[in-house]
Image (cartoon, rainbow, N blue to C red; front, side):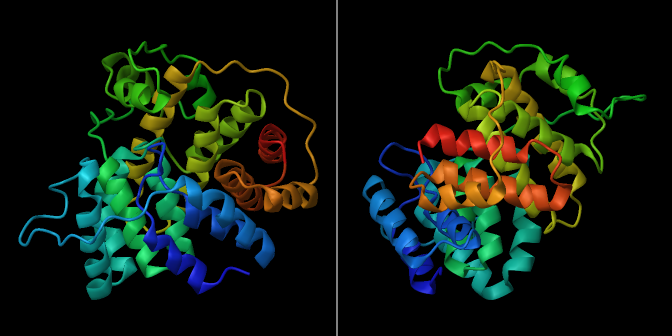
Length: 322
């Protein structure tokens, strides 16, 4: 059972772990609890994961009078951003803050390899004031400017797979796919090709299923991020008054990731049944495996069980060795 003390204790850690990756302690804890992990599994997870983290820096007050977006993309601004969002949430509540902050933040859905989006989606679901503030702060300080994707021409394609097949391969000097993706998201060739898709009511389901297929058949880390981010985007869009622009921005970063990830698809593993997948995920100590299985399970409930969700979850538990 996930206790308030476990969630409260997430605030003692910095936004980035010792390897400079986003801290995903709270999302993993919430995912484990949703999969009905027992207290001993939650305890074992934090005992394994916490040594990888860094202590939170001291609180820093947000500069008086500055607009909230003025420090977007500045990693060092996280202590100030967490103060801003904590105070903002206290005064206006989560619904109001999300409606104001998400339209700007979702212009950079792929920030930090989609981790800002993912952590925020979990924070909103667990309704923990401090974690929502820290998650929004992590997204804000990782934010990266994007060239806006042009509107789809008429007539435009509505089938994602058709447009993905026409995407150019975008070369990058960056070895890390997250930085390469940022470069590709602003590349004129990618913008031209990706703009051919008309994003609409079925787009996100198509993206989620294709991401799950790509991960199931490759085990690629970028494909894993696409799987979890698609489910996170589904949850985030529920809190937006005008989700169309956010969905188009997400599609831009999704397409950019595909353009740089060099996905080599092989054979998917034989899918395990959900009870076994959840059992193995509960025993996992890897944040990516835990959140991947949880996101696949939630996605399957929403879109149906005939997609690639079980195969992707099976790849995750087998890859992590759990």
